[in-house]
Image 1 (tube, rainbow, N blue to C red):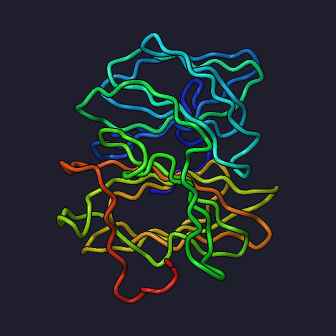
Image 2 (cartoon, helix red, strand yellow; image 1 turned 135 degrees about the horizontal axis):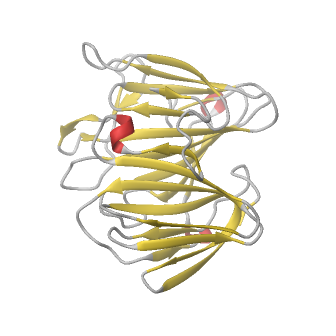
Image 3 (cartoon, rainbow, N blue to C red; image 1 turned 30 degrees about the vertical axis):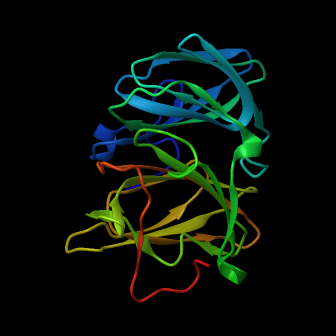
Length: 266
């Protein structure tokens, strides 16, 4: 469930997780590295995708549309603009100065139009308090930006803080209470030699059980289980990108907190 940086690299992708690699049905994540003047073309296939700059900017072309993504210097800056790519399309990503770009994807049924998500319209939520404080950028949360199945958010955790806390899960379909969602965590750590820790504990016999030391470029798969806390090393802020998708008829993020740990969310 813990995929160290480089362990899934293929071609231009520093990270390449598809449903087959993850052992599930819907969620995907790629991290594309482009040098100055570089470009990359691909087919979206049976998945919808969001192109999210991690560092640098790019031009995204698809379905006769062209989106200029301003991007940002790093994930530790402000929210970025992004581009939504529909399924069954051809897309090109090009960058004059080069950069790194996350491609968050989900297998889906509906073909929605290509769109440009604007950075000033990204809702930013201050969640938790004290040593559980963190900042959530809900750029493609279920109630914010229309997708068919894909849900994606960014979380910034100050050094020394806990986030993804209290432990919670979304591995059962219970209408109005809990959604069934696969999830990918992708991590970056601010500063050299920084690290963090990610815990996933079983919610059922034989379920996912993981305590991983994570560094920049690592990913953690969460097919089931209580996930959290995500712990940032003192002096090193932690970033993670959450990519989620599941089989529910409604695209929604309903979570259930661990009964032994209720503090830390608000």
